[in-house]
Image 1 (cartoon, helix red, strand yellow):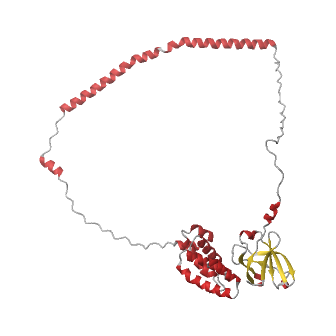
Image 2 (cartoon, helix red, strand yellow):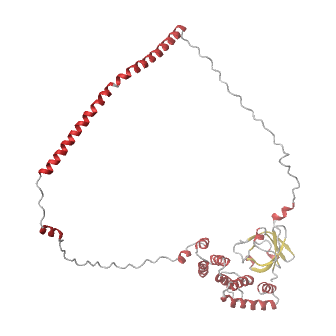
Image 3 (cartoon, one colour):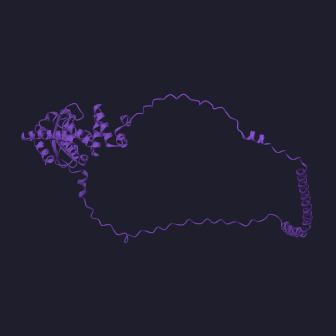
Length: 375
């Protein structure tokens, strides 16, 4: 492990990055990044201090506790000073965890003992409208005359109803006359029908009989006309049109974003192929995200590709991965070989030889990687 960079826990939710011998850079604008995790953005330095020749950088690590595991190796990079080193991440006490020590000792009173105050609502006073009797301004003599007129109108209406009931039987006399005329109409209709029937019978009897057809006429009627066979009409064949070339599904994936490819691709093989294509097109972030998704779903080809990208054996700068990671390479190659991919056996063996040489030279990270992934 490099001695230029160290990390330790400080206050709750904070981590201290120690840059050995970099006290001269005190006051520079510096950031901390994690090359292994594209999902972690660069962390701003919230406080700087100098101890001897060392520069201490304090960052907010409260949110990093959900991603980084304590006592595990990770790469930390200071881009402004071009320093990259692998360190053992310490255990960071979260700010939320530090505030959980207060215990509420107050006992909640049982709901049965709590007496809820009874609020009496004042009922609004009912509005009473007193109607004063309307006094008529007419003289009493006129009032009595109007009462007498109303009484006479009432008795005249009753008398008119009785007169109508007495006149009702007179209305039924025309209906009796109508009923007596019905048989006369029926008899006239019956007479007309008899005349029509007699005329039809007389026409049938006195009409001339039809002459029976001769045998020659019958034969001529039965023989159909012989038609000459028509020459079969041959239509010229329609020109064959070449089928229209439809874009393949892989071509459609090229136009989609990373979430759309993950959602609409029919299988992990298509996701892996699209990830490799985007790496070749130098769309490194998209390619790595697609390969990581396919590997998480069990695609061994994606695991092999990621293992080769992280492997320090034949690492090439300027590619999708900024720096090699022996542990990530060992993890992906181990999963690919355990998944039954024989092509992962040779790269994994080459990585083991490389780690063995580094461990013999005193590299603790190489020794720890061999212990974790080759038991």
